[in-house]
Length: 54
Image 1: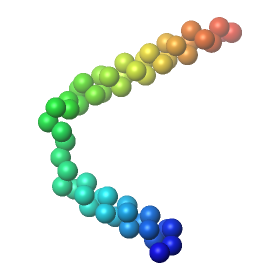
Image 2 (image 1 turned 90 degrees about the horizontal axis):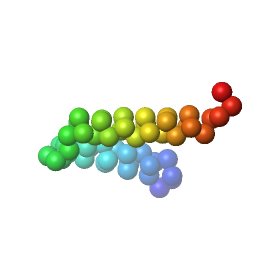
Image 3 (image 1 turned 90 degrees about the vertical axis):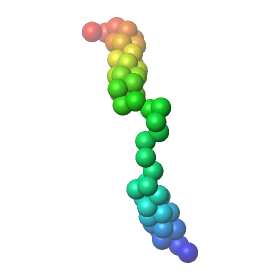
Image 4 (image 1 turned 45 degrees about the horizontal axis):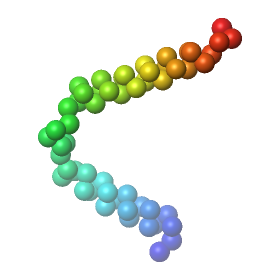
């Protein structure tokens, strides 16, 4: 098999598995989103602390 056809076959099998997979019961969208927002705000704060030329 060539590389593109192998990659396509793997992506098709991965996509078909994703249809039947549900979200994990312990994951909360609010906690995940809040954690991501916190991390991004922390990175923004760190970036502005190092940018002393403004």
